[in-house]
Length: 432
Ligand SMILES: Cc1ncc(COP(=O)(O)O)c(C=O)c1O
Image 1 (cartoon, helix red, strand yellow):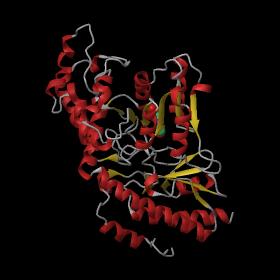
Image 2 (tube, protein in one colour; image 1 turned 180 degrees about the vertical axis):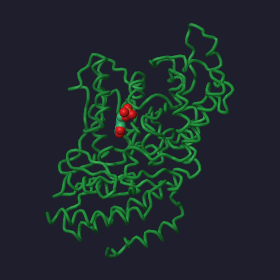
Image 3 (cartoon, rainbow, N blue to C red; image 1 turned 120 degrees about the vertical axis):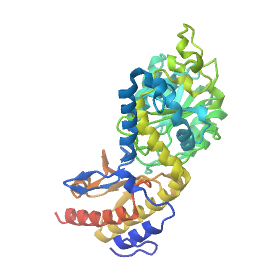
């Protein structure tokens, strides 16, 4: 592969970049999937993160303690199960920029979104509308629309979707602000993805929160694609609430326990609705089995059920890795990897002669580690050829291949090797 003015894409050079990088990948701490006996190039950590090798031991610890203690493990396990979720607070608060009492791991993402909407979507009088992004992840759209219907509203009029400008692929924050201002006294909530699942656009969450608050609306974010990808400061940004999953960048396993953030200013409020369960009851009195609910004065008040310990064990060991490396450093590395991949894809496109439209923002500050590529002239056949050649990306209808070089385990060498395969595949498809 030819050198471009700024980057060199040979595998040897990429390897030397890996060796001298101040934030080395920890690839050997993960299981790299193998297809047809060969390790793949894995660019789908934005969909399902790889298994940390520590997951096995973490799970075994809890299985062994369960075998040894039975129910007594709640108090006598090495990590007592009764307050197991507390182990996760330091990692989660580090990642979202929160105080420990503002976060809690529980349930699954869409479930948590509904539970938070119970608290933060309370349409009243004229204030019935929700602003979200057009083409939000479908589960979010379903959740928002069904909450509106649940309150007797009409999603056709109460759900306002902000789309990219004509010809653009990403949404301008300015357009969100304009919509917020023009619906000022009708707006109950602004609810967006922190990083857009399709385009990879990173929203300016602070700016959007400020705009929502200026008209008296709440502001919340779905952080499925932001968590473990970009650093955040949800507390300082005054975000009201957020929810996320942990099976993507957080590498906690398929369907892993999710989490929520509730801002300090709301955690002890008596005047908002919440669905209660015994794990949200004052922990000191939980086992007194009293009939009257006394909530925790932390985000834990939103917990309903006792902790899914087996899964949380994997989550905890995975979060430890983020605490060891630090999300800020990972972000710096992620910018370097993503820029290298971006430049390499453009170089291959130039050499082979196809249009590689990256619908992800070019500005590194407006994206995380994902690049969404529309490879004009190839469509799904390119995705299939890459998979066949051992590169795991993902395909999103109608025409996008998403790739996420994840700094914990992807390397410059992965990218350089991928570019050779990309060139081979596009050359072969062009001559068909
Ligand atoms: C942005 C976003 N929101 C919501 C979901 C739904 O997640 P879950 O099935 O864990 O509720 C996903 C899943 O990938 C997602 O990417």
